[in-house]
Image (cartoon, rainbow over all chains, first blue to last red; front, side, top):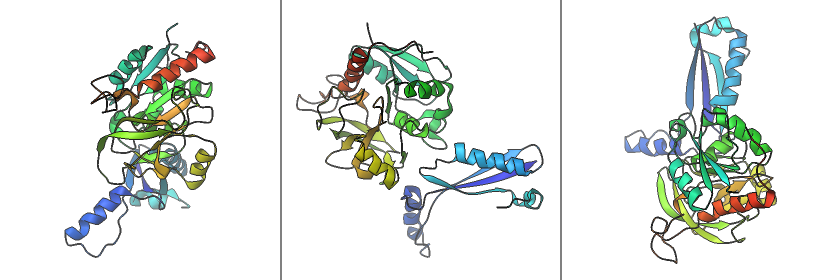
Length: 92
Length: 240
């Protein structure tokens, strides 16, 4: 079984309202070290077969077409779960 | 011949019944359309109503975009079928790339529900031709993800081509770029807006207006516009 991790973040030039809300809550709870927070999404895609470059490419496609909206978000990372990294030969 | 206006129901759609009622009150026939049915049943125009299609999971409108009915709507819109996207329906239109830009959470992070003043910036579309240019209207606004965003180039292009259909007046309720409440495509047959015309169609159930409390019926003109548009351009071609 292979697991692909896809990370999607709001575009840096966009105000991230959810991140802003979290950033506002942190100091109220005593976490005064952090000035800014951005909140994104992590997807875990599981496939029955071995981790192959083709599988990673399919995940990249899915990340672009479905998992993110390029108007407001960037796909920042598409990678195999740590355990599979060595097998994948992922150039990224 | 009565204009037939289809109203799509997705799982989680909220305002389909109100939209069908608005269509009827405007003098057209309302035709319920189902998300899983590719057929548009020969309707003259389509409304994508408000709500929370597929629970707004992933992104508002993102999953609805892949519904079978949307394939037919995207194709027909390319051929001139009038399509109105209201609130969640507007989000579906941007996710389908029928309209540019996107909607993100309101800048104040809260759900908002209010009677909203708008200025009609483009009265040359299939859904706005019964308004005067620059007319001020009041219709309800209720959303969580209503902040319209697009890159500078897209915003400049929308302005230059006169494709901003509606602008918020008095107060920008969600942080939308350039106070944009609604836009249209190049051909003027596809219009999307965040506020809800279908909630301002009936005496006693609309926003407060000069005519009296809850007497606002500015929303009717959206549906009257598309009826007029169909009368001008002839009946719809036979569509799926």
